[in-house]
Length: 119
Length: 108
Image 1 (tube, chains in turn purple, cyan):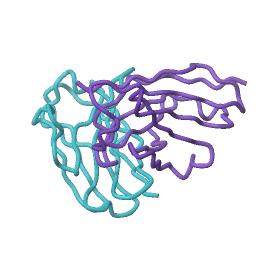
Image 2 (cartoon, rainbow over the protein chains, first blue to last red):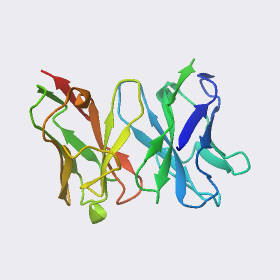
Image 3 (cartoon, each protein chain N blue to C red):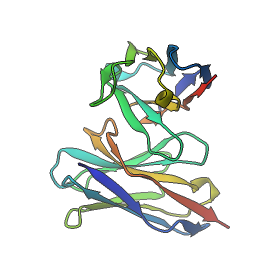
Image 4 (tube, rainbow over the protein chains, first blue to last red):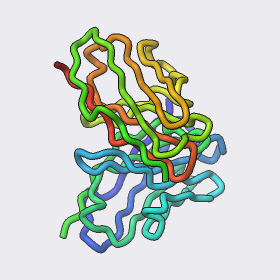
């Protein structure tokens, strides 16, 4: 069974960098069958796609965040990661990692991790 | 960017009733590449429907999706107690992938 688990600090200071890692089990992220994605959800609000990465290392981002976001992959650890630079309170959200068949839908999700940006 | 507008924002119904949720797109969704998710409090979204009308694995047949172009519908034929949740649509016909604002189905 495919499982994804987010990890990283739950509190980040304003203007600093948010860093999260997603560890995948039950599937190999180097298999090439899927894209691996980050999605976020501000408290009480809707969902926002952040970006995808493929096993080759090719990444695709939401233009609204592209200038501040980097998604990377470590196939040796079966992990992929997210960095968001220059965070503000608007970046406070539950961050989810998810598997994306053909970069379209999100069929398996992590449980999500709340990241709060403090001033 | 395709903007998805879901209506109504809240739907108050009783168990056993039929729920009809709408998702409107600001421009035509290519190849009807539209998805529906269910989200319960404190949990990640769950994939229900993809390609506008194909149920994901393990999804009961009381959930059905329909529509094309700019107008899509999720129907729950008879609401079960576990169906009260928030439902989101998402399009993957063009980048960036975008989500609707959600419809909350609550117990009347």
